Length: 232
Image 1: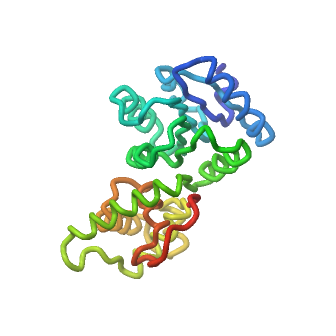
Image 2: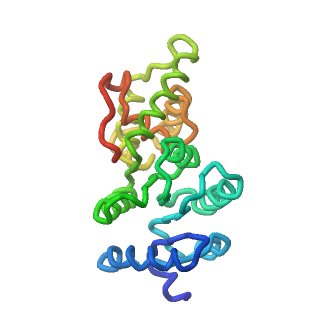
């Protein structure tokens, strides 16, 4: 097991071993040609892969029909994010309610994928988030946009608009780019980018970078049209 853990892996996390094994087999067919391997693991054992020397490229957490708002599930979500704060993470769920996808965003997950999604689309979505993007149902984007509009309505006058520089940073956050890469592209210090990100989060009423990226899809003053595609 140690030898496998040294190479880049995709973790498939599930409380049900048989279900987890099936999903892991399907994901392995996709990631093996990429030089990675998918490992099935129960939530309580995920800490093994957070140890130094392990390389985790992606985490897929299958929750089945459980709600992300259940106390036990929230504990699992928080544990995954606390142990892997920078690793792309996707939720795989049997549920389709917009509030479930919004819950995934609130915990900083980069994707919410229904088990009704065609397998080819699942592979595309996982590849996209593994490379810095985000994937959420359109209904969730609309829900998030409504929340953003309510937050901006209650914000103090003049505080809801982004400066031109913040808009440039936001465009790059939307593409999943890191602070270091944004700093390089905009010719600024990484510490300055961090300040802009905090200010953007405050103005948009977001609590994490994933929320910012999803809100950017809606474009508001950022672009007053309808929602763009669910991949960000």
